Length: 228
Image 1 (cartoon, rainbow, N blue to C red):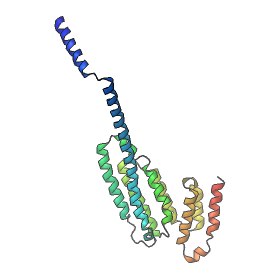
Image 2 (image 1 turned 45 degrees about the vertical axis):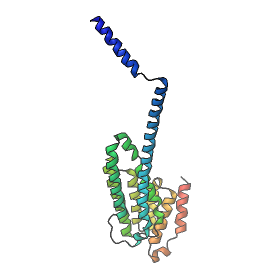
Image 3 (image 1 turned 135 degrees about the vertical axis):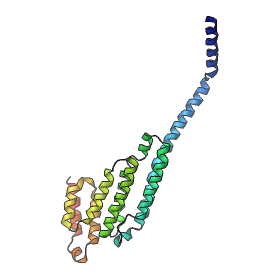
Image 4 (image 1 turned 120 degrees about the vertical axis):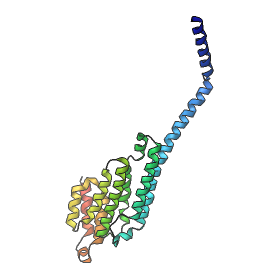
């Protein structure tokens, strides 16, 4: 029995020696693993950027036709928003089946902030927006929020922030706008509020617009932010 055990150990040792890698081969394998790992991170970063590029593309189409919101009749979500939602859903289905939960979550991390930034910073492209147009924009944002909730299973505070920004346009008087700014001042930048004021000013009837000192209110906003 002891002889059999000895032969077995020698055979196993011989097989192990055959499997051992030389130092050169070990370095080659190690470098290949490092390259593969780096490549996987690069691919993940490219996907991270591509998702945001899809978003930017569809929203740019929305704001390319911003003048439509001055006289829009229907308040249903914009077709460009629906296309964006379908695109995001398709990406979600493809990526979720190919990536683990941690990597998938990374791809959509901060996505709401990216959307919010594009939407608010693109608002100056509206020359004028009607009450129906405001409602339509709010529904656009709500539609995106629903899609993101399905993807991430949680709501997004940043999109809620954009929705509030659009709802501010329902204010009909200058004092209402200023009260809103005072209450929500920390949520938006000085320029966000000034453009909100300018956009609302453009929507005032001629009789009200004459009595609205836009420059005065802009200075009040600037002073408010300077004194923070």
